[in-house]
Image (cartoon, rainbow, N blue to C red; front, side):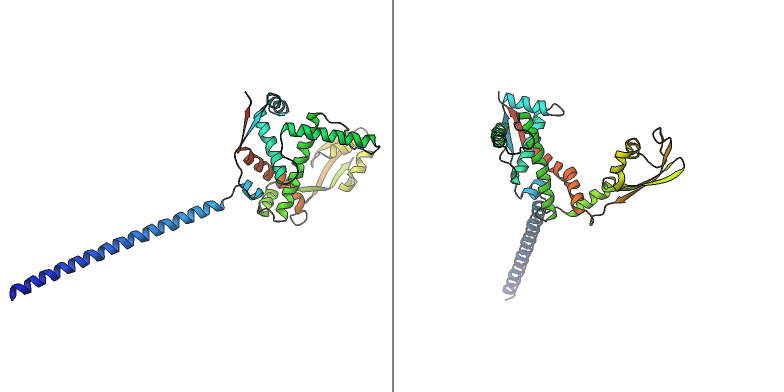
Length: 292
C-alpha cells in the first residue's frame, strides 16, 4: 500500500513538472509573438513615415519622376555646348530638358527636343509671314533663326512655369507651406523694401525727394538723379550743374509685409528658391549621352 502511494506521488510530481514546462513554453512563445508583433508595428511606422517624405517633384507634379536618357546628335551636342554659359554642353542640356519638361507638365509646351523646337519655329515663321502679307501687325520678329527661337521659347516657358507654380502654391493646389516663403522674406528683407523718400542738402539747404517724383527728377536733373539712386546717408557729391555740394542725410524705405503683397513675395520665393530646386531635382533623373 505504501509503495503504491510513493509511486503515485512521484507520478504527480512528474505531472506538475511537465505542466510547469508547458507553461514556460507558452510564456516563451507568447513573449516571442509579442516581440514579433512589436517589430512589425515599428517597421510599419518607419515605412509609413518614409512614404510621407515626398520629393519636391512628387509634391509639384503629383507623380514620381522616372529616370530618363536623352541621346544627342553631334549637332545638338555642339548647340548646347555653344549655348552653355560655362561651356558644359551636357549639364546645360539637362537644364534645358528640365525647363521644358516642367513646362510640359503644366501644359505650357509640347514635348521638347531640339528637332521638335525647329519644327515649331518653322510653323511660327510661316504664321508670322502670313500675317505680315495680309497687312496684320506682327510684334517682334517676322522670322526666327533656331538660336533666336530657342532663346525666346526657353525664356517664355521658364517664366510661364514660375507663374503657374506661384499660382498653384497660393491656390493650395500644391502642398507647399507659405511659411517657406515667409522665411525667405525674413532672410532677404533687402529685396522686399521700396524707396519712400530721400532727404538731402544742397549747399546746406534741405530738400526732400519723394520716390514718386524720381522719374521726373531723372529728366530734369539726370546727373543728380543717377547719383542719388545709389547713394547712402553721409555720401556727398560735387555737382557742377547745381553749383554746390549735395549730401544725403536720410533715406526712408517701406518694408513690404506678407499681407500687403503676398503675390510678389511668393513669386520671388518660387523664382529664386523653389523653381531652381525643382530643376535640380529633375536633372538628377536625367542622363545625357551622345551618338557614337
